[in-house]
Amino acid sequence: MAGGWTRDGAVQDQIDASIAEELARLKARRGPEGESLTHCADCEEPIPAARRRAIPGVKLCIDCQQERDTRPVARGGVNRRASKDSQLR
Image (tube, rainbow, N blue to C red; front, side):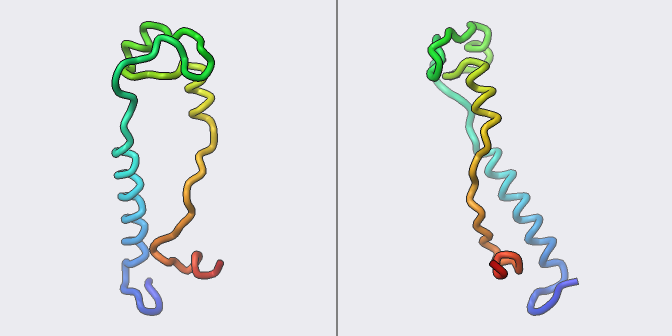
């Protein structure tokens, strides 16, 4: 049920494209690499040897990493597809 100048299925195509872009962005994220630190970069506490072996290139202890993971991440709210919602702002 498309309206105006769009064809049928255009909205679903936009949804599918948005999901595909987000999945590609998540897959492109790389984890830590290189030599692990022996002490946390934030709090200077020792990083356990088991964590350093499990995650090569780790820079943070478990507590600091959990704190960082729970912080809200600001992402751009740009709607490049010019949906009706973005035009109403």
